[in-house]
Length: 153
Image (spheres, rainbow, N blue to C red):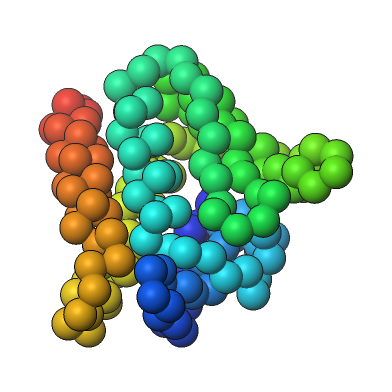
């Protein structure tokens, strides 16, 4: 099981929201358990990638972290998603490999994003920080997921 994790320790700069943000792959954390990143644009990029490839039977795409040399290389084949968790400093290194259900990963990402959106919305932020774009991307992917669920037996 792959879980997208964040902690409610948000810090706000002039243009971004930073928080601890990582992926937990059955107890292994990538990039690591204390990794901080710009959660709003990262979630938006990831959601847009999943949304773009949602109905494709085969697709390859990458889920990037904003800071550092880390990304997840994804290969979708039907409902399976092969994931390689990459550290790309001076040399590309596969840290972890896993295979998950694409639709379960999508649902897990939607749940995490919903928590982030709801929490940040309660703060009545004076700046937008890209939250409107994240909400739009979330709504698009959520619509595709709900449509997919209706086609299941």
